[in-house]
Amino acid sequence: MSSSPEPSRDSPDAVLARLKFDLPAGRIAQTGAEPRDSSRLMVVGETVTDHVFRDLPTLLRPGDLLVWNESRVIPARVMARKPVDDLGHGGGSVEVMLLREEAVPELGPNVWSAYLKPARRAGNVLYLGPHRAEVVGQLDDGARLLRFEYDITPHLDDIGRLPLPPYIDAGDSDDVWRERYQTVYAGTPGSVAAPTAGLHFTPELLARLDDMGIERTHVTLHVGAGTFRPITGAVSEHVMHAERYAVSAGTADAINRARAQGRRVVAVGTTTVRTLESAWDGEQVQPGEGDTRIFITPGTPVHVPDLLITNLHLPGSTLLLLVAAFAGESRIRAAYDHALEHGYRFYSLGDAMLLENARG
Image (cartoon, rainbow, N blue to C red; front, side):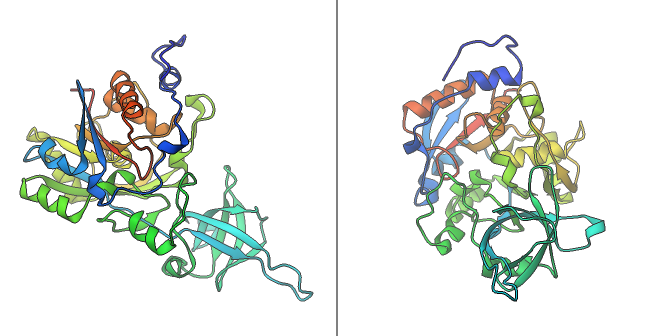
């Protein structure tokens, strides 16, 4: 990694520049470890040590509270077709990447934002299988608003495919990915990308954590396509897409009780961190739901979790800034240097890290 200083040394832009690194394409994991908990796990604190993910119970303490994001990835990628007119014109294909259902009262119910390739204009009609949708608007980022005649969600399993990240060569069938690109505890449908830190868990590992006396609870954050969008300009100008989250009263109570008792809160994934920090009121985690655009950068304290389980992220990404804010720049530089030197696999299907919060 580059370590050359920047004029404004403590700014997020300077940190991101110093964390820049070159990643060979061969280090981007194309398949997940099998079994899932045989992936590697780097523990990053005052030192950096190498483990296997199934070692996690030996790295945690009885009484620790594990918090994960239980959102389920939906089959959001659909090949649609244009209607054919009376003269036989039309019928071409349009790739549709559904993002989320939008609340736009003036447009009525069953409106989704979506990326279309090629793009379509307002008034154009598409058929996603037998399901009709009309383009009724456009968002600032180029996404279109599609209005369906009824709730499309129950039909996505039949017409859609799982929306894998573009850096994964999707050679296997969709049936394979529907199992592998999903956490074993996935529940509420709504994400268009997996909360990937959770992909390392197996039912057997969860049972061992239970036997150790490690408590667990969950939040929900529906991961949007913008989560992994790289930062292309100044950090201050980067726009985070809104993502829906929910924290139940039971989850908030479990977290607040653990903190009050001096027990550690262990966040599984950056989406869990963003949810917990969105629900933080300055003293406690509050139950509720809503949209969050929270952007955690160096200089922003992370209040709730004491430990973070996360994968190895993209250079120039918001997620790299988040882990630098969480663990501290020097520790993240050491961790990524170690990962590059010792053959760790990167991104969604790659290896994991266990990070300590820099606040001590």
